[in-house]
Image 1: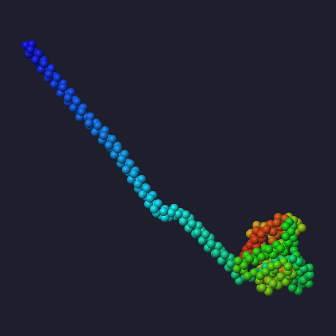
Image 2: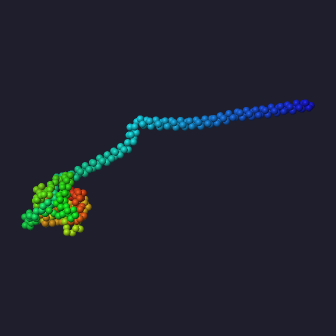
Image 3: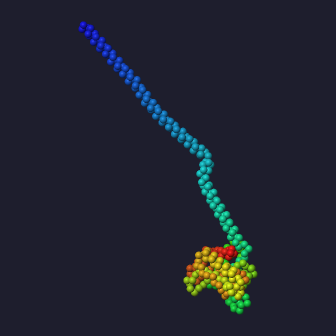
Length: 327
């Protein structure tokens, strides 16, 4: 009985041992089988990351390659790049060229308009006074018994020492050039200082030319050094020698004074109507005397001696002549 029991116990022990051994083996096999799965999974994940990294690098490489290729292509064709880069500059140049062209066309148009203003018109310019005055007398008008000195040498700048006859001729020559550019036919009474011409003789030149306007250029003087500004002069409506020209001479005087003042910015004084000027009384054409400013005024004397202001005075008078003929 005891032997049987021992055998039974031994058998059971063996069976249990086998069962335990079998369980451990299965567990070991299971663990062994799972480890490769884990390793495989990690490998696959690493492979995927590597693959992604490789793919990204390949994409970057491809993009870089494409960019490099484009750059290489542009380098091989620099003209295309220059054309692209220069396009805005070209547009600016074209725009500048257009502006310049338009400006030139406008200048030509303005010049043509100015040239046409004086077409067919004759203007005689008398630069008042001369180097040496002539104190001999002549009648103040045709048939007059009253006489005056033929011509004086004029006044002198209180600051500059500039002689009036010098100033008058300088502005008259500029006026001549300005009027010629506007299409006028211009006749100068004098172009030098060393002449001997009376006021009646000067008027005769305008009469013989059948001038459309006779412009007499002068500067003023006063005992009061504060007096300044420009004025013009013409005959009265009752002038016994040429009163019939009053309306035309008055209009010419108004236009010239306005043009002068507008362009120079000087003080506008007035239009003086007088029958005492032999240079007016002997005229058979519309005339005006322009007193450009007072050489007895320090500021005005200094200003009138400058070339810039002389040009302004000439242009202002020319503007007035234009206005007169455009009435």
